[in-house]
Image (cartoon, rainbow, N blue to C red):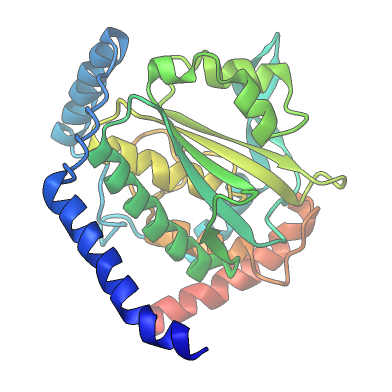
Length: 309
């Protein structure tokens, strides 16, 4: 015991000196930065197209970010009607191997479990865009949690809500990954994601438990070629639709659940509809006829609170 105590310090000093000498003789160079990914020619063409689209929409006063104002009034009656149209109907139907836009009656569907959200970027998405999109998605997820009461945390461990940010060629060959993310996904949904037409800016696909009304998993696809505002608009609409507001309505104003592109980001009315969807007085599986009278009561209460503020 005493010998170890006496010789311990000299040995340690020698080792430190040897290490220091080695460091001085062979300095460690900093690792070379990884090269930025280069987008394909196809994506470059699409990026230019979507930039022109965003510029045109902005020039027309569309993709508004103000959430609505004095020029877009709505009443509790309109709020309840819009809620039923958007939450109790579906936007698409499967037809001949594709998803076709057609409003069909559905039932009330929502999440009844915490959401573990992750983000997957295509290999050609630039680093700066990844940082910006990750921050935007995390911030918006927190807002959705506050509105719905559903805990949403960022987690790569067994995620049940995955946001894909992919460029055109990133999607090719993604079939296997889609089947991993959404076990049991049908071929029509896979082809819709892989062969997404140019005029479809983004999409969300959800799967449900055995009862068909409680969300089990969801995958949202955001085109990486979109300019910043269009991309953020897609994040707002698809992530909110993936919470259960699955349809669009031309009568909903102010709302992002309207194909007229007037609003780009979640509006005041959209926030109220999310609150309504997760009100405990409504339950998954309700039909439009069952939910409508309750929705009118909730809408009246919410609008009264808005007026008091």
